[in-house]
Amino acid sequence: MKENYIQLNKDNLLRLKIVTSEGKETGEVLEFDLEDIELPLRYQELVEKDKKNKENLRNQMLIIDKRQDVKGKKILSKNEEDKIKALNEFFNKEIEVYNMFLGENGVQKLLNGRKVGWTTLKEIDDIIENQITPYIDIKMENITNKVKEKYGEAVNKGKEVLKEDE
Image 1 (tube, rainbow, N blue to C red):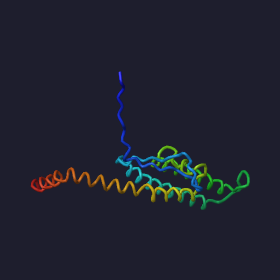
Image 2 (image 1 turned 180 degrees about the vertical axis):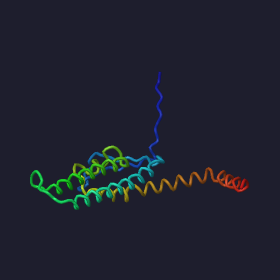
Image 3 (image 1 turned 90 degrees about the vertical axis):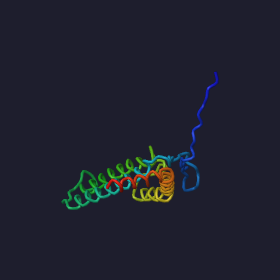
Image 4 (image 1 turned 45 degrees about the vertical axis):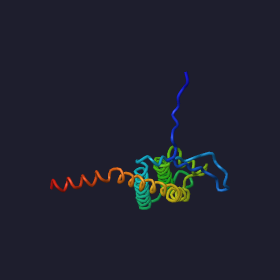
């Protein structure tokens, strides 16, 4: 008996190959399903959680700065150790938040072995803003137009019905 197959359509997948600064492919790819209507919501959540994380870090640093500093266990003072711990916790939360949007290990793929820091987070923000969100914006506009095209008359009739009931 012959097996039948279904060919999947990948027209609406955004595939971004990751290359090094020298232009060599890393073999890693970020993939976004532009038909996923939750993608803009995940991006919005990324922006909101990123803002909260930064605010939380700022508050932690203010608290540490207001405390009296004492000698630490080794070279660093207690406040310096606490600041490093707070930064480490912040960067781990940022990785989690960005991966929620970029996909599993998305940050690690983009960093290609580098450590997370202020500079690398800025690079990731630039990549998202310049290479990913324009596609999301275009796709959302297309979806909105398709809905208007398909359901425009029904929506207009619905408005008329609402006006009559008032």
